Image 1 (cartoon, rainbow, N blue to C red):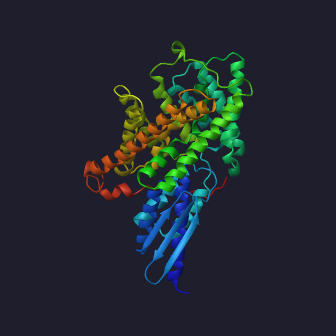
Image 2 (image 1 turned 45 degrees about the horizontal axis):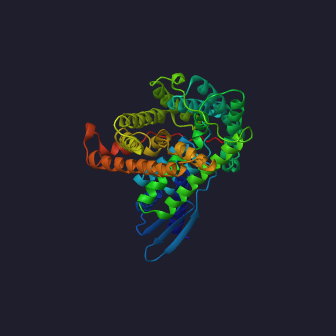
Image 3 (image 1 turned 135 degrees about the vertical axis):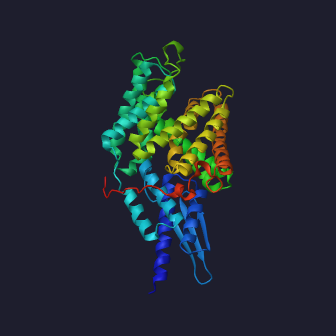
Length: 435
């Protein structure tokens, strides 16, 4: 048998595996199709059609002599990927697009990415989760009593996740389980005399379950006419919100009739400068919890601070979803500048944490919970959620277009830097270890 069919078969297998890996990483289908098409052309296959959906991919080859359609189910790994694994997948795609990585080496590196251990172990996992929850509480400017309660709830949630972390099959039900237990404890604290706004206590320890990035990517895909994938992600995101709301209401109703109504009491709330410390704590917490590379942490922190600053400054002159739009524009400009001008991590790595700051998931959870409780005004809340999602998606798109027009590497001599340097990454270590 000649070597050509073997090479073609290896290429097809690599493209299928890489597409599945990028789906697991949460990348938009348009970008996945771009990656796979460019990699195929780099390996001498010009006539290829790539169609990617959230659950399946079609790779069609036709060079006049050979016509083949490859179908691959995806993603092929249960549960979400950590930040270091997402970065590993995106660097494989980047190297393969540049032609510096062969399909066989790419397959080996992808297999190694799945076997990477959490960099900080169970202890770092739990500490990171608690810090992330406390950071969100500080950004919400809750009282010191609420911050302490959030820290305790975050510790409980982190311990539950550690127990099932090596059981991917549990990932589908953990949002409901964690939301039920956390809300059960909050309802018990209310019976014991706690007096704090309920969402200020529930949102921080559940923030990592909120599908803000999924919902925003769904709107982006719909904007690019990827109707099937966009609608699928949108439904999946709302389903995640419904599951969380179901668990929350179940836990609260074990003690009382529903969500306690407590008005915020301004005198006991934290100073205005503490939300900025909350952003830093949230960044550190996500770094430990999601096991990002140490080098990538500082870029993540920079992007989050810029996104938060853009949204905060816009809040002085704008209201509503317009502030999220400005934050998304600044976020995207910062992430792309880091990737292409400073040889930083792929933009998706620094964008994903910043999505939580723009908070479409948190507002959506409150809206869905209000509907379940038959509260008034919830239809308007759902419309406001959709406007916020659209604002973030539009801001991300416009930020990308602005960067491409003003600072793109092929058109700019900014810093008098060799354009090819932005595509050269430091060697990434893939330790041969397993959980």
